[in-house]
Image (cartoon, rainbow, N blue to C red):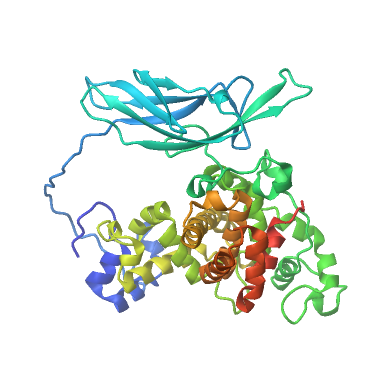
Length: 480
C-alpha cells in the first residue's frame, strides 16, 4: 500500500488496502518481539506490516496570513478555586495582537452592556467597579494599521464585592470572566459552553476541587469493589460464609467488613490522576471521583455480563456521544485511527465502517482488563483512562446545553443555574439524551422553570428514566 504521510499507516488505510477481514486478522496479531530483538522471526504467526521503501515528491501548500486578534486578562488578582480574588478594583485588560511584520494595532473598541469604550493603541483597560453585582456582556474588537479589523469577540464578566470583616480591606472583589479570548486560569468546566457562572457558596462542594489530591480521600464501604477484590484473591475473608461473597458477586456484610482496609486503599488509588485531570480540564475533582464511585465503585476492569468499560463505564452509545459532542477530542483522536483526510469530516458524516473503527478504538482505550496483571487490571492504563472519561463528561455537558437550548430557545445559563445544568448533565450521562430531552419537553409544556426540582419530577414520571434521579442525587448530595 502507498501511504502519503510520514509514519505508520492508519487503521483505515490498512482496512481499505487489504479488506476488512484481513484487517481484523492483522489487528489481532500479537507483536513479534523477536523482530525488535533481531532474533528469529520464523515462529511469529499472523500478519505483519513490512516497510518497503519510500518515494520522494513535492506538495504545494497555500499559506494564509495570520489574523490580528484581541485577548482579555485581569490585572492584579489572585486565583481562588478558578475565580479571581482582587483586593483592589478589578480591571479587565484587552490586549491587541498584530502578527504581521511592520504592522500594529491602532485602536481597541469595546462595548460593556452597550456602553462604548475606546482606547488608542493595543491596550485597553475597563474598570469593573462601575458595574458591581451585575453579569456583564462585553463585545470588543481591534483596528490594525494593515487596514482591517479583527472579528468581534464576546466576553461575560461577573464582579461581586464580598465583605471581609477581619481582612486588610473592608471587602474584596470576586471576579469571573468567560470568553474564548480569556488568557487567565481556566474557568470552571462548561461555564463558557452554557454561559453560566459557577456558584461561590459552600453548599455546592461537589462542584469544587480540594487544594491537593489528599483532599479527595474517602472511606466508603463499597460492596461491589469488595466483591471484586475477594473474587480476584487480592484480599481474603476466611471467617465469612462463602468467603464473604454473595451469589451476585458483591461482598456480603461480613465480606465488606473484612475488606474495609483494602477497599479504603483501593478507592483512593486514582486520586492523584483525578486531581491532575480536573486541573487540566476545569472539571470538579470531587464530581469526577463521585461519578467513578457511582459507576463502578473504582473497579475499572468491568463486571461479568456487562458490556461497559473502564472507571466510568463506557458504553457504545457513550462513545458516540463523545465523538459527536466533544469536537476537540474527536479532532485529536480520529487521526490516530483514520486518515487525516477522512477526519476532516465530522463524526456523523463518516461511513458506518469508519465509525465502527473509531468506537472500537475507544473501547480498546477504555478496556483496562489484563489477565496477567494482579487483579486482572492494568492499573497504569486505568489511571490514563481518567482523561477519557473527563472528555466524555465534557461531551455530555455540550449535549446537555444543546438539549436545554432546543427546549427553551434560550442560552442554557439564562434559564438554568450552573449546578442544575450539571445535574442535567449527570442525568444525560446516566440515562441518555432521550430521557433528558423528554423531561425537558415536559417542563416546557408545563411552563415550569428549568430547575432540578421540575426536571427531577419529570424524570420520575418517565418509568424508564427514574433511575437517573437517584444517580444524580447520590453524586451531588452533601457528603464528604
